[in-house]
Image (cartoon, rainbow, N blue to C red; front, side):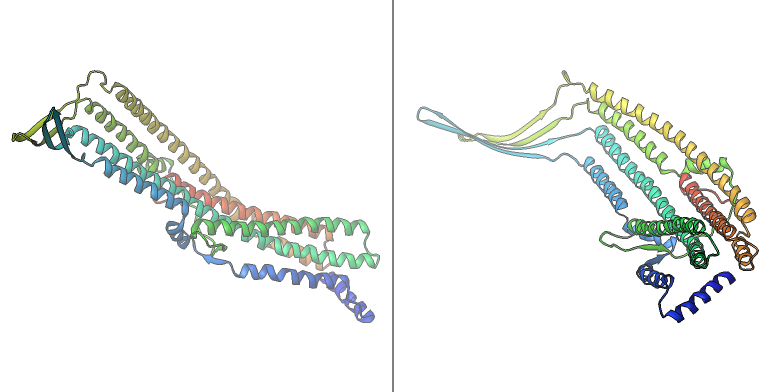
Length: 434
């Protein structure tokens, strides 16, 4: 900038004559020193592609580990439900006394409770359905967490882009302040102009600092999602995503969701588990007999085998309460399935409408209205250097450039997020887009 270069040359000549370092130079040197740790901190950030981030998430995410442990728990309970009752062994000895005479009896007894096949089969199938439902719940959690990884990754890309935009714009205000302070010393500008410019610079310096804090925060959030416990580092995106704008029919998206959303499969397994629980509750009204066999020996020389059977008589307890409870559970599970299907359809519709709206805006705003926004700032700087634009107009152009670029960054990030949100809403089974 010619005016700024003139001010800097004038300041340098005055500094050489007095041998005193100008305050502006001291501030510049101090700023460089203070920025060195920040640059070094960014250099240690590890970079990862989205594909690699998804792989690390699948291996290391702690919430996903908890969900998988729940599946193993349900699988173990299902195996336990199919276990057959253990037999019992009893050994008794009965000494008898009368006057001076003694007698004794000894028993060796083996008992086994026999469950009816219908009861055991229904109980086992209900437990297996619950285990399958737990597996689908892991898929639900995995789908949500995987989308969170993508969302944070896209947010990290946008955060870096915002900082890259704020950095040069902030530098323009720094240069402008140095120039206007020098001109104020020569009496060319008023003190109001200096104070007004410093207000704008303070605003941009604050925005740049907040962007830097936000960037480090999103780096740490990405690391938390994809790295194992005990690693306190920052992870940044290796490259921005390139997602073309495409079209998709809403009906196909809803159909894909009905086929692939794990919430539907989870609710269906819950319904089946409740149905088999009713069968098990009804079958339990039929008493399970317990057969006994053994050997008896008496002290008078008599001995022989021992056979018996015990059968509960369902007089006071006919298991009506359990049957009514499982019937209510089945009704609740069927109602929950209908609710889930309706919620998923609404979820897909919302995700589809959001994606379609953002796709239209990306084509209009980013590819047409703001396609040549970079020329705005370049033209303004050239005009200011040639004296055809005032400082206030330059600052206004810088602010308009910043707003336009950040608008484009946020719009692109929202569009890319909506793309993956639509994939999440359809269960990852969305048909190829046209």
